[in-house]
Image 1: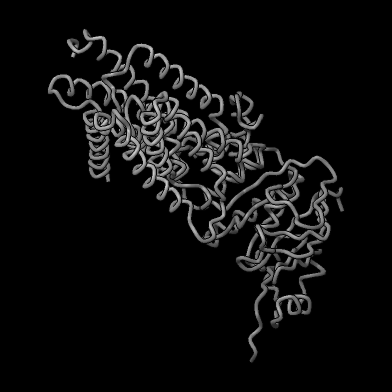
Image 2 (image 1 turned 90 degrees about the vertical axis):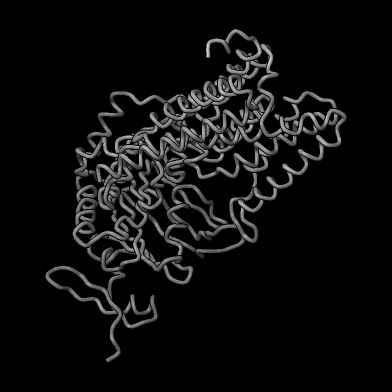
Length: 272
Length: 250
C-alpha cells in the first residue's frame, strides 16, 4: 500500500477521496435521517449534467457542477410543501431521469465527449491535481464548519420541526441552509468522484453508522470512518489490480456496509 | 381568573385555500386548564399551530397580551424511530437558544434537563435511546422537553392517544400536578370528551369548523352538548368521575 503513496497523482487521488468521502458521509447522515435519499440521487445527477454542459460549452467543470446542483437544491427548497396532484418524490424522479439523460447528451455532443462518459458516473480521481485537492478540501471544510455551527438547529428540525419552531429555530432557514450546503458539497465533489460515488458516500456509510451506533455522534464517527477506509482500500485495490478507481471505492464501501449489517444481525441473533 | 394571556378575535384559520376553522373567538388566561375536544380533522391541531405562530389567521387576529413561553408536546408518533438520540438528548433540545446556531449546552442546561426528567419520573431513562422506550415513557420524555423551556403555557397535542388506561391516568395526573404546582396554563388536545371533562377547567368544542369555548360548568351539560353535537348526549357521574356518552334512543 505504501508503494501507492510514492506517486503524486495517487496521493492526490487518495486525499480527494478521503476528504470527499468523509464530508459526504457526514452530511449523508442527515440525508438518511431526513428520508431524502432521492434528493441526494437527483442532486448528484444534476451535478453530472452540469459537468456535461460545462464540457460542451468549454466552461469550468467545477463551476458547471456547482451552478447546476445549487439551482437544483434551491428549487427543492422552494418546491411547495403541500402535495396536491403531484408528489415531491415524483418531481424528484423526473429531475433525476432528465438530469441523467441530459448529462449523457451534453457529453455526447461535446468535442471531447466519449472519453468523459464514464467520468460522469465515477469521476476522474486519478486526474485530481494538487490545486484541485486544495480547493476540494477548502470547500468541504467550509461546509462541514457550517454544519457544526448549525448542528443543534439541524438536529432540532429533523427531530420535530414544530417543537423547533416553538424554541425559536426557523425550519425554513435551516432547510435552506441544509439544502444549499448539500448542493454545494455535491457540486464540489462531483468532478473528482462522479455522481455514483457521491451518491454511494451519501448513503452507504451513514447506513452502517445507523445500524451500529446508539447515539448520533457515533453515527457520524462510524460513517466517516467507513468512508475513509473505503477510499483508502478502494484506491489500493484499484492500484494493485488495475481496476477503475471509482467503482473500486464504491464496491469496498458497499462491502463494508454489508459486513456491518451482517455482524449486527449476528450479534442481535446471538443475544436475542 | 388569572391575567389574560391571549385573545383570539374572529379568527379564520386554514391552509392554502381551505378554511378549517371559522370565526374563532376565545380568550386564554393564566392558570386555566383547557381541553380542546373534537373528532379527528375538526381543526384542534390547526388552532394549536396558530397559537404556535405556524399559521396566521386569514381574517381576525391572535393577540398576545404578555410575554408567553410556550412548551409544546406533540403526539409521540411525531418523532421518527430512525433517530439515534437518547432521552436526555431529546429533552436538551428544549434548551436550544439563538435559533440553534452556535449553541453549546451548559452545565445549567443539563441540570435543568435532569430536573425536568425527575419531575415527570423518568430520570433513570436519561441515557436510554428514545426509540426503545414504551409509549408512556416517550410521552413523559416529550413532556420533560416542553418543561425545560420553563413554559407558562403548555400546549399538548393528544398526549394520551394510544396509551393504555393506567398510563393515560398517570399522564393526566401529572398534567394536573404541573398545572397546580407550576402555575402553568395548559391546553391539551383530545378527541375524548370524558378525559377533558375530568381534568379541564375550560372546554373548546370543535364541530363543523366552529369552536364553542367556555368554562366547563357552562358547557358540560346535556343540553349544550346535545345542541353542539346534534345528538342526545348524556353526562353521568360515577364515583366522582364524569362520563360523557351518546344516549341510546331506547
